[in-house]
Amino acid sequence: MLKNQSDTANILRERSKLNKRLAYEGLLVGIVSGAVCIVYRLVLSNAESIYFTIRDFVAHNVSYWPLWIIGLIVLGLIISIFLKWEPMIGGSGIPQLEAEVQGRIDECWWRVLLAKFCAGALALVGGLSLGREGPSIQLGGMVGKALAKKGKRVKTEERYLMTAGAAAGLSAAFNAPLAGIMFALEEVHKNFSTSALVSVMIASITADFLSRNIFGLSPTLAFSIKETFPLKNYIWVIILGIIAGVLGAFYNKVTMGTIKLYKKTPFLKKHQRVIIPLVLSGILGFYCPLVMGGGHKLVEYLNEPNLVLSTLVLLFILKLLISCVSFGSGAAGGIFFPLLILGSLIGASVGKVAIMCGVPSEYFMNFIIMAMAAYFSAIVRAPITGIVLIAEMSGTLKMLLPIALVSFVSYYVANLLHSEPIYESLLTNLLNNQPYQSMEEYADSKELIGYTVGFGSNACDHYIKDLQLPRRSLIVSVIRGGEEIIPKGDTKLISGDRIIVLVDAFHLDETKLMLESVFTS
Image (cartoon, rainbow, N blue to C red; front, side):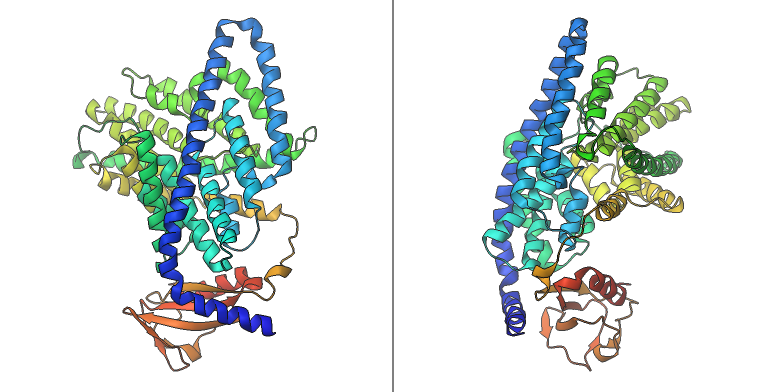
């Protein structure tokens, strides 16, 4: 009991210093996470080059093809060793980080860093259609956790630093600091608290600064937008949004279906399933190398003139196939960039049809940029992140209005089709397959959670004494207009108040859900 009281007092004392400390800790997380993810980006770029070099050699020396397939199987067995040693490296890593931030799992940071780095690089050597962005987010998050552990920080602060690391990871992977900030807060932390914003912004900007010193100032995407999309053709923005929304919902269904299908492969253990897409990459890569790897070769291809509609549709089908088979196997790699490439193929296809219907051909690239944002919005269901990400990656704000509109339409269509956001589906799948983890170490620990009173919420214009708060929770601070109010039973909460709640870490998940129903509208 005394220990419990001591921990609570310590947390409350530390809160007053938290924001100042998070500023320089965010800088440290940005430097270390940025450095790790920059090296990872360089290694993956070289790994993909190795695949295409070997593929080109085999294409000109067909007698080596059986040896190549054998080599890919051996590569799969090596990757499976890492997957068996540290199962948390499977997939993109974003659901794992979300679960960690929510207090549902506890990853071993150094094992994840080592195994994810190696297994992710080897997967690209095998030509799998996986992205570097999800793994970069997980790597950044684990750097944040490592620094928190080394500094002996409380769990609340550890989660802030993991969120900051996630932002730094995405920022370094895409040269997109604002998207890193938005994604970390919108998707990982799921809360735009002041404390989180301080560390996340500093970490993301720092990582981007380091990344641009290595990779240059040019936008990540090589698509040049010459003209602003004309208002008279906005009907095509609506049509594109509908198509992207439908295909985004289809992508989610196919991806989750592939994961379920893999579970019915009795001849391979879970960590050995990566052998299947590697063998497929040896076959499909032989005939259609464009769809292999993350998709950078497809970006170059879409810049070529005289593209054929039927070829674009076929490339979309093949890219979708190899992406789902690669990711569904549990290989260490993400879906971020592959899904953006799939979106670009949708945009190119719709753009071709629009040009046939009279839209000037100089707007072809506009369709590609719009479709990438729309497809991201439909699949991930984080439209603000999608809009900011594509704007940063394309290096122009000319397309902000049509990107926002097409993202909203695709988001709405995917919702109408009852398609669950991909990372929520993956998180549910992860937790359902997790063995029971003892939470005894959290039994007496406390955490601070922040909420903003939403207009029209159950807390707005109500006294604290009248709120239906969950057990094991206590409002310890109300911040209004920059001033802190000591909460009492007769304190009336208004819209915009920042509430700090002390909760038991042992019941964190269910308590957070109940508190969200009270404070959010």
